[in-house]
Image (cartoon, rainbow, N blue to C red; front, side):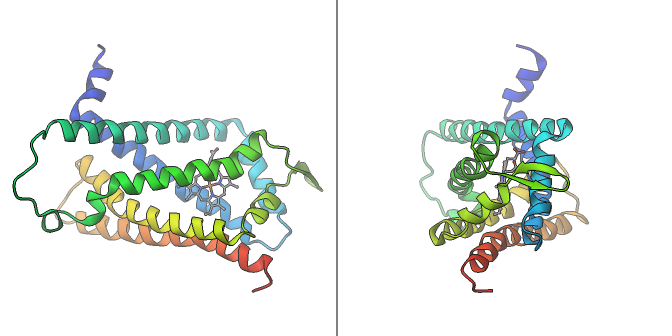
Length: 230
Ligand code: HEM
């Protein structure tokens, strides 16, 4: 067994990998949010479609995408491995437990919250990513060239109330998952400091509220626009 696989299979190695992949996914989410803001631009989707074409055809971005997929896969696999490990290393349940006094609800529910986020990601990738890569999306022509009209696919998806509700619900769950994940990742990396830890907690909480809220605003806005409510 090489030093790398030994390090990754140690308890600390597994937690480190969870923290690093989680932080990379936070970085991805920020970029994804900023790019998706183009959905708000009133230009018939041209900027959004040009952005989607750039994101799916530029080699350096494709490499970043592969790192993103790998992080999702490792993050999920290692969360399962850590859960099983924790369960096996405590075969006898404590006689007296008072979980609500010892830890926050979010920290105890990371597995459930993460599973719901994973279900969201799978459905989300099927709706947009799969369609963009392998579906037969109509082509649209602009002065900058012809490209797939992903804007139309996103708009059509968000005309359905149940689908918008599913996104809003998933963003609430993502918010809880991030609220614990952000500060936990910094703790695992040993970046705790009397002066900076409270600041990291505040930034983590603000991120966990603002980012999912802005993501949720997109389906809500497109739904309201398509139904003439705004
Ligand atoms: C709610 C607003 C969101 C919208 C409108 C949206 C839209 C899209 C679209 C159109 C794509 C396909 C185009 C592309 O590959 O760049 C995509 C890809 C993707 N989305 Fe989202 N997204 C949203 C939120 C999220 C959230 C909250 C997550 C994660 C929790 C997420 C994870 C992903 C991933 C992993 C990909 C594949 C990226 C890649 O191939 O590099 N998205 N999204």
